[in-house]
Length: 273
Image (cartoon, rainbow, N blue to C red; front, side):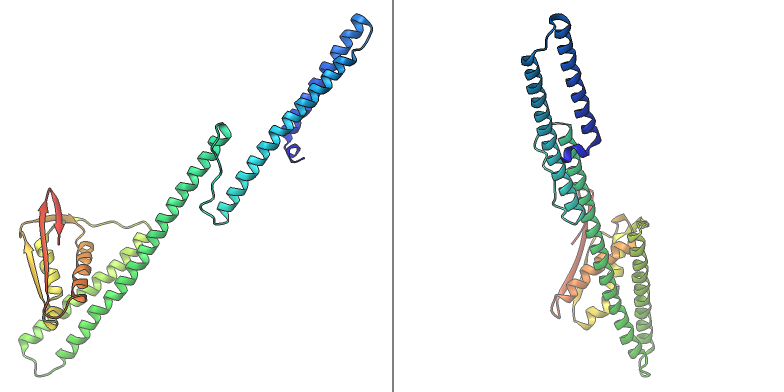
């Protein structure tokens, strides 16, 4: 029987058997010394009692063995990839408390795995988005370079496109720095460089970044908000996020559209529309 594979159970049954045999011998020995005879009835009672104890013990440990087999089966299923596998623990007792703890641990591991998966997906999407965004300043630089090669261009226009080219180069540098930050984020070593920034100045920089595209698409950017509102933030990361929103607005509006950026303080919380 499987239950006797457990040395402790085997020792327990052996100890009970020794006690049973010793009790029988002592009882029969006492009867012999006192009455010079053995009792068949007492022997029968001992045999029946011993058999009952053996049967009850075997039944109990067999049930416990089945419970453990089921627990091991569920644990193996979890290790094989079935993260919904759980051990039944509806009854009371120390063993079922252990099973409940194991189930709780499995739930925590699942939560950590889900969080890690979401983080990996976020990093993947962010890197893909930054890679896509690099195409915009590169395309703009290509256009500016073509225009600057026109020998008939006025000096003021040359300066304007040179300034715009410098902005796009700065934009590329920020995107490359963001890629490096993403690598640090994946390694758990990201540090946000927060400083007190003027929101209006940030929005004007974003407006300037999209000024050429706005002229090309005959669109208009309208800024609306206090010039004296400050925000404690990482300027590069926040500007990147708002840039994405404005870019989406350009991508999903028709020529001649008006794109508004509004900011204000509400209940001590900075809000942007």
